[in-house]
Length: 395
Length: 87
Image (cartoon, rainbow over all chains, first blue to last red; front, side, top):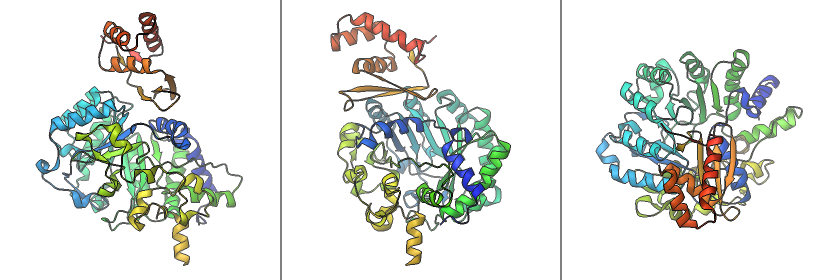
C-alpha cells in the first residue's frame, strides 16, 4: 500500500503529524479540537455552527480547472449577489448565533462591489475571518484596508496557488502569476496573515516542492496542501496518497534540515488512516496516533450560498440538503432543521464498504460528499481512500 | 473596554445546564462560565459601558449584590487580558 515509502520518510511524516513544533500549529484548530472533544465525540451537536462559509458571489475573474463551482460561475457581478442590506442582515444573524469564524468565498470575493463593507461588518461583530481568494484583484488600497480591519494573527487571507511561474496558468485559466507575486509581496509587507494553498491533483503533485520553495523565497509564513475534491465538474483526479506522500516527504526533508520560517498547516494526504494501518504493520516501533475524523459539515459548520440558502458545505449545495434561507429564518432554527443533515450527524452508521477497516471508528468514512458524488449516498466511504481504491483495482 | 482580539466566546445551553465557552487563541486555553458572564461579554462586545451593563444585568437577572459581582468579573477579565481598555 505504502511500500514506496522509506523508513526515513515514514519517520519524518510521523513527526510532522505528531508535533506542532515541526511546522504545523493549532490556530483556530484548537477551538475545533475542543469542540470535537466536548461535543461531537459525545454525539452532541452545538446549537449553532461555530464556522460558516459565506459565498458572497458567483462572479469570478478565473476559470480554474479544479473549481467545484465552475458550472455556476459568471463574469457579471450584478447577477451574482444579494444587496448589502441583506448581507448586513445575514451577518447580524451569524453574530446572534455566536458564530466564531466566517469564511468569505465565491467566485472571487474581490469581484463583489461591497466586499469592504462585508468585511467591516463581520469585524465590527468580532467574528474571525478567513478570506479565500485568487489574490489577483488585491491592490495597495485593498491591502491597506485589510491591514486596518484584520487582526494580524487570527484573520487571514488564503491565496490559491497550485503551481508556479509558467505552470500557474495550466490550472488558473485567465491567471497572471506576476500579478499574484505582487499581491503576495504586498500582503507580506503589510504583515497580513497570508496562507498559500495548493490543491494537489494528478497534474501538479510533482510541483509541491516548487510551491513550498516559492513561499519561502517570498516570506510567506503559512502553506497548506489540500487534496483535490474530485467533483464531477472537474476532469482532474487526486493521484494516490502513497505517491503524494513520497513527494511531500521531500518538503519535510528540507524542512527538517533547514528549519525555514514557514508553517506547514496541512499535508496533502487525503486520508491518513490507511497510512496508519500500514505503518503499524511495517514499523510498529514508530509512534503514530490518529485522531478521530469529524467532518465539520452540519456538525460544526455550514455554508450560506449567494442567495442566502443554507447547506451543510460547499460541496453539498443542492436541494437534497437545503436547510432554509437565512434571510427568512434564524440561524438556530435553520441549523436544527436541515434536510438529510441527520445522516451527516449520525456517527453510528456502519459504512458497509469500510466495515472491516481497522480505522473505521476513527475515520467514519472521511468526506461524506466524496461518497455522495460517487455513489449518491454517504455510506461508501471517501473514494480517494487508497484501501478502497486498491480493493477495486484487485477486482 | 473591548474584547481582546485573541478572545472568542459562545454560549451552549445544552452543556451542563448552559455554559459559556471562552477561547483564548493566544494561549490555547478554554474557560467556562455562566449565562450571566456570557451576557456581560456580549454587552462588552456591543460597546455597552460599565454602568449600562450593570443596569441591564440587574434588570434581566435580578441577582443579589449584582453590581459588585459584575465589577469583580470585569476585573477578572481585565487581569486575564480577556478585555482591553480603550483610549
